[in-house]
Image (cartoon, rainbow, N blue to C red; front, side, top):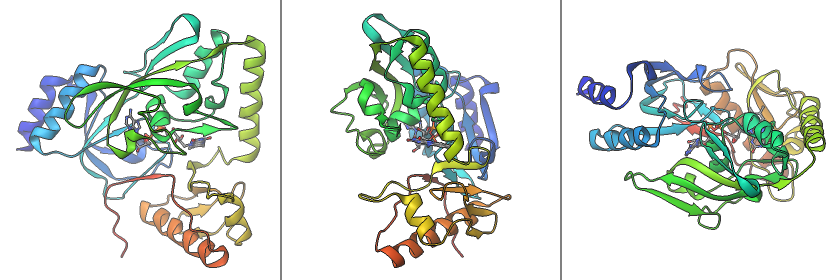
Length: 307
Ligand SMILES: Cc1cc2nc3c(=O)[nH]c(=O)nc-3n(C[C@H](O)[C@H](O)[C@H](O)COP(=O)(O)OP(=O)(O)OC[C@H]3O[C@@H](n4cnc5c(N)ncnc54)[C@H](O)[C@@H]3O)c2cc1C
């Protein structure tokens, strides 16, 4: 049955863009995660569509990922197929009047430098977010006062039935770290954004300034998935965790960062189990002390055995 699936997959996408039993620790910024049965790198909308439909027909679960910078994959990995949208699917078109259309797999850092090169302002916030555009739109990623919601006009998506459609900004339901793409398990193919004429040097200076701020405040030298928790209304997750006395708190190889308590890090060969236990303990202790229940921002993939 599975070989038949693989044969069909090879009719859609070249063999060298199909990985079997792929360790997900190689694909996540946390460097955690067991093997995925299949991982593929499609390079066109048609390939993505055919793969989705094949999975559906064959009853094989699938999951879309970008750069894995907001992902905790379980130690047992993923029984299904991962569609990784990366540099095979990363075209950028800069059009007139500040319109930019980019494919889901482009890295935010690359996109921000192309936008800056064209003397367009409005994407400086995205330069230091270590994910793809697909992940950023799905998460409505944001930083330093900017977010995807501010610059996006529309996005082309494919639904679980293989239907392709374009959703305008309202239909995308972009809210704090959330979108219709997450809620309806859509796959983002490309996004159309609008920027404004600016002075190139000012834009580059802003990017430089924000990146330095990040380096000063965040443990960028450690393996992490960024802020592990969403910002609770009226509070900062990092401050609550620090005030609760959890700076440096460690379970197995997973720890609360000393530098920024909102970042839980893979300090020393952490397993997904260590990491998820640490998340649970941080939530429990902060809630007991302050009555605020932290909610993870990081996405979980696979099954987590908590024995
Ligand atoms: C050091 C560090 C700093 C960070 N700083 C920030 C920050 O300032 N602001 C911020 O918002 N985030 C930040 N993050 C978190 C992360 O980078 C963002 O959430 C980013 O947008 C995730 O993009 P990704 O491509 O890595 O997505 P992934 O981690 O691969 O996936 C994240 C989610 O998006 C979905 N997804 C990805 N691509 C698609 C697609 N094409 N179609 C449908 N669904 C898709 C996945 O299924 C998953 O649910 C940081 C992370 C790190 C490690």
